[in-house]
Image (cartoon, rainbow, N blue to C red; front, top):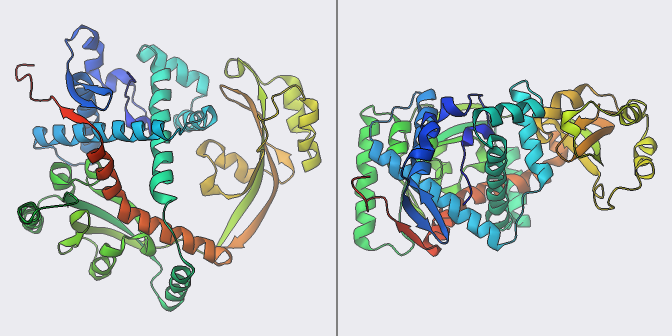
Length: 435
């Protein structure tokens, strides 16, 4: 069975394993038991306990109090079940997380904590047996889940020509160029809800709204009651452009001032409440794009050694795209598919991994970065050129992306609940009251 690990490592504010999970020190001597079965996977009590501790720490860091441990336990168990359901679906579709994708995330973690990847591996393995591999497994699962969502939700959204024209026309007429930060509570309904189920859900969200209006914390109530995908983040949906806000929220959001709570909103997935946390001007105007190329030189032990002099010299002396292309001749014994997609195209800084961003930003065109050690070998990044563009030059592409994300946001909770409904799930949490 796959080990689960702390999702904070994906965004990393560095605390190490025993500090995060003191229970792990004695986990080997505890009698474990199954609390849920999801298709052919099992969820153990120790996993649930560890994830609950993790989430309570995250919430405490955000000043969100946990006053109902039973409700938190149910939310955390539900999130573990949904993870397994999504991983099973990803496996059924044949989706894979490539080593290079995992390595990029590990590089981000190391960079944010001012470490080399080698130092990160040693530290994690020191704090917990096979700690580095457990982090790799967790990152791989996160990448698979993201690929699944792109394949089954985002990529399935159809954007028509008329929608694009309407979007662009509305943008030109609108004087609002803002982004909104929203929090969300969902009380979900089954797809074929009975009148009684519908009435019970409505009464529940009405009570929640009254509690909010009386001054209770939105994030606290989201953790306790919400069925939305962001419940364990206090319902925080993050920053959204106006046209990424789900259609059934949009009218209400326009009426809200920061701090306001919406009226109850109904959608196919259930009843919603929205809070407008903040509002800001959207980014726009001129941006810089970078045309990048990559080349990998295989090495079994790159992370444990200095850059070989011949590879360092080649990168340092690279002055043109022809020099970069000559790498294929210089290293002609490499597998042909290893560097088949070396042209990364034009990218803004936001689309460049954190570990490389600042280095690329200061790199002159027709030069390469110092080769980077990865588990696969030495990675050479070459900057062919950079250019200034205005966001409006890509307005059609931006329109498609904004409409697609808005529709995906509308579909996501419903898609997730359908996946759950189609899975075999057996809850055993209350089977052993004495455990």
